[in-house]
Length: 376
Ligand SMILES: Cc1cc2nc3c(=O)[nH]c(=O)nc-3n(C[C@H](O)[C@H](O)[C@H](O)COP(=O)(O)O)c2cc1C
Ligand SMILES: CCCCC(=O)C(=O)O
Image 1 (cartoon, rainbow, N blue to C red):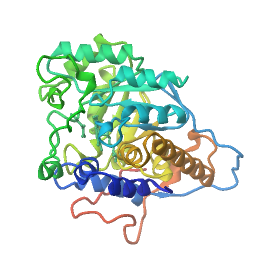
Image 2 (cartoon, helix red, strand yellow):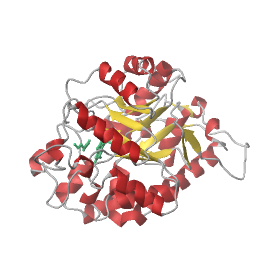
Image 3 (cartoon, protein in one colour):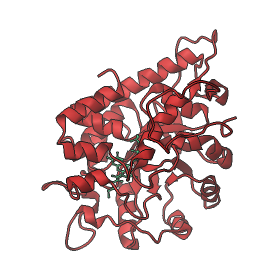
Image 4 (cartoon, helix red, strand yellow):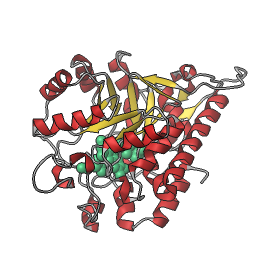
């Protein structure tokens, strides 16, 4: 396993094709899925030389959490689909690497049990909790209480899902439910009937900024909004007292044909103007990808599918190796860029090609992104 893509290939060879499709897939024509990765390939790095330093500092402080690197685990549902230990394995690997893990509300291990497993290692859990605000206020409050009691140190509220994205691979494959024996453990006992069932997670098409105001009054945990794309919404988020933003298009799984997150980053960062941290996810597969996002103003990046692939390939050990690999690539890229600290990563390191053919992976017609004019 030398690259993230090696994990992807190995996972596909091991997994039920229906589950592999669930992980890799996106909404509709998957134009945004491809755009996310392609955008990184189109940006260039222009390094500085003779600024040597024997070691690089990769650790960060983010919303009261400390991490050994600016790569965090974005929330992904259903880890037991790919590994019998599920989120316990992922969380142990994240803790061993000193990385922040955002636990999905749709985890197949209860958030309290995940936190216990990390504490049992003697590690200081850096767990955040991802929340879909539920139409039923009491259910939302109970979920927040469960996450808070588990010791989660931030709430990541996903706001790009008023309705669930149309994963046509899942429809074609007839994948609508978890297999017998697996359930969304955070939802157990929240309502009569289907206890812990996936269908208990309701999408709330009625969500608006007043719900965020309510949440702000309800919890003292830092609130991160996940899935904000428009710079005007970034400004609104700041006004509504949000503590951080996760610039994300849900890995291309919600609205198809939205731009790559990397393409939106400069304008987004300009709108936020340093008032709160901006994290980016979508298509991060290499240390160079992380460096490009950090150089353009992200405080950290998130990875989604790579975690699922590594967990499928090798369980806890697989995720450990994935995180080590990305850490090494990040460290190596910093060295090659003449950077010894993350603060040395500035926009001047990044360039838009000014002539010649578009490098990077092939992009479907219509997915072409124009960086020109956006990045100074
Ligand atoms: C299998 C899978 C499950 C996901 N589950 C969730 C989830 O439960 N909640 C959420 O907010 N985002 C979820 N996401 C989106 C990720 O948090 C993240 O935004 C996205 O995967 C990042 O793109 P990447 O996969 O290209 O790294 C999921 C993504 C995948 C691939
Ligand atoms: C209700 C589970 C949502 C999972 C999710 O967000 C995704 O698969 O992208």
